Image (cartoon, rainbow, N blue to C red; front, side, top):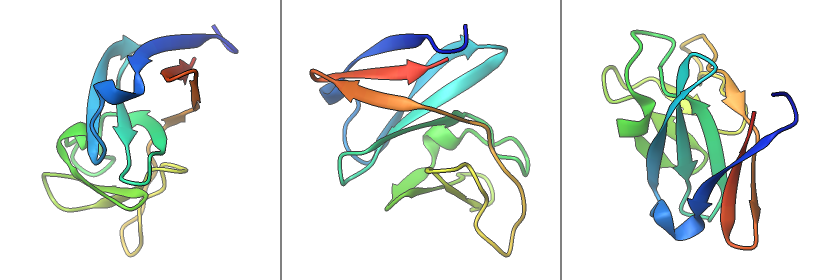
Length: 104
Protein backbone atom coordinates (compact mmCIF):
# COMPACT_ATOMS: atom_id res chain seq x y z
CA UNK A 1 0.00 0.00 0.00
CA UNK A 2 2.99 2.33 0.22
CA UNK A 3 2.66 5.11 -2.32
CA UNK A 4 -1.11 4.84 -2.72
CA UNK A 5 -3.42 7.82 -2.20
CA UNK A 6 -6.92 7.51 -0.76
CA UNK A 7 -9.44 10.15 -1.88
CA UNK A 8 -11.22 11.21 1.32
CA UNK A 9 -13.50 13.82 -0.21
CA UNK A 10 -13.78 17.51 -1.06
CA UNK A 11 -11.90 20.12 0.97
CA UNK A 12 -15.14 21.71 2.14
CA UNK A 13 -16.18 18.46 3.83
CA UNK A 14 -13.91 19.38 6.76
CA UNK A 15 -14.56 22.88 8.09
CA UNK A 16 -11.47 25.00 8.88
CA UNK A 17 -10.39 24.48 12.48
CA UNK A 18 -11.93 21.01 12.61
CA UNK A 19 -11.05 17.37 12.00
CA UNK A 20 -12.65 14.30 10.51
CA UNK A 21 -11.90 10.72 11.42
CA UNK A 22 -11.41 7.94 8.92
CA UNK A 23 -12.03 4.27 9.55
CA UNK A 24 -9.13 2.14 10.64
CA UNK A 25 -6.20 2.37 8.22
CA UNK A 26 -3.42 -0.12 8.91
CA UNK A 27 -4.89 -0.87 12.33
CA UNK A 28 -5.27 2.78 13.40
CA UNK A 29 -8.07 5.35 13.22
CA UNK A 30 -6.84 8.45 11.37
CA UNK A 31 -7.76 12.08 12.10
CA UNK A 32 -7.55 14.55 9.20
CA UNK A 33 -7.23 18.17 10.32
CA UNK A 34 -8.10 21.33 8.36
CA UNK A 35 -6.35 24.37 9.83
CA UNK A 36 -7.63 27.94 9.72
CA UNK A 37 -4.92 28.76 7.16
CA UNK A 38 -6.33 26.09 4.80
CA UNK A 39 -3.71 23.39 5.37
CA UNK A 40 -4.50 19.71 5.84
CA UNK A 41 -2.70 17.24 8.11
CA UNK A 42 -3.32 13.64 9.15
CA UNK A 43 -2.32 11.90 12.37
CA UNK A 44 -3.25 8.72 14.16
CA UNK A 45 -6.27 9.73 16.24
CA UNK A 46 -4.61 8.92 19.57
CA UNK A 47 -2.64 11.15 21.92
CA UNK A 48 0.56 9.43 23.09
CA UNK A 49 -0.22 10.36 26.70
CA UNK A 50 -3.52 8.64 27.54
CA UNK A 51 -4.78 7.89 24.01
CA UNK A 52 -7.26 10.78 23.92
CA UNK A 53 -9.07 11.32 20.58
CA UNK A 54 -7.10 14.10 18.90
CA UNK A 55 -9.92 14.64 16.39
CA UNK A 56 -11.97 16.07 19.28
CA UNK A 57 -9.21 18.48 20.30
CA UNK A 58 -8.87 22.18 19.59
CA UNK A 59 -6.93 23.09 16.44
CA UNK A 60 -4.90 26.29 16.80
CA UNK A 61 -2.29 27.28 14.28
CA UNK A 62 -0.46 24.10 13.31
CA UNK A 63 -1.12 22.26 16.58
CA UNK A 64 -3.99 20.35 18.16
CA UNK A 65 -4.64 20.23 21.91
CA UNK A 66 -5.74 16.84 23.22
CA UNK A 67 -9.18 17.07 24.84
CA UNK A 68 -8.23 14.86 27.81
CA UNK A 69 -5.15 16.44 29.38
CA UNK A 70 -4.28 19.40 27.11
CA UNK A 71 -1.15 17.94 25.56
CA UNK A 72 -0.28 19.87 22.39
CA UNK A 73 0.68 17.95 19.25
CA UNK A 74 2.33 19.55 16.21
CA UNK A 75 0.29 18.69 13.14
CA UNK A 76 3.24 19.03 10.76
CA UNK A 77 5.34 16.25 12.29
CA UNK A 78 3.30 14.62 15.07
CA UNK A 79 5.74 15.72 17.78
CA UNK A 80 4.45 16.62 21.22
CA UNK A 81 5.16 20.22 22.25
CA UNK A 82 7.61 20.44 25.21
CA UNK A 83 7.73 20.12 28.13
CA UNK A 84 5.72 16.96 27.34
CA UNK A 85 7.43 14.24 25.32
CA UNK A 86 6.11 11.89 22.66
CA UNK A 87 5.13 11.50 19.05
CA UNK A 88 2.07 10.57 17.00
CA UNK A 89 2.38 8.82 13.64
CA UNK A 90 1.61 11.20 10.77
CA UNK A 91 0.43 10.52 7.25
CA UNK A 92 1.03 12.57 4.11
CA UNK A 93 -1.89 14.62 2.80
CA UNK A 94 -2.29 16.41 -0.52
CA UNK A 95 -5.02 18.51 -2.11
CA UNK A 96 -5.68 18.28 -5.84
CA UNK A 97 -8.60 19.77 -7.76
CA UNK A 98 -10.49 20.47 -4.54
CA UNK A 99 -10.16 16.91 -3.23
CA UNK A 100 -8.18 15.80 -0.16
CA UNK A 101 -6.00 12.70 -0.48
CA UNK A 102 -4.41 10.65 2.30
CA UNK A 103 -1.13 8.90 1.59
CA UNK A 104 -1.00 5.27 2.68
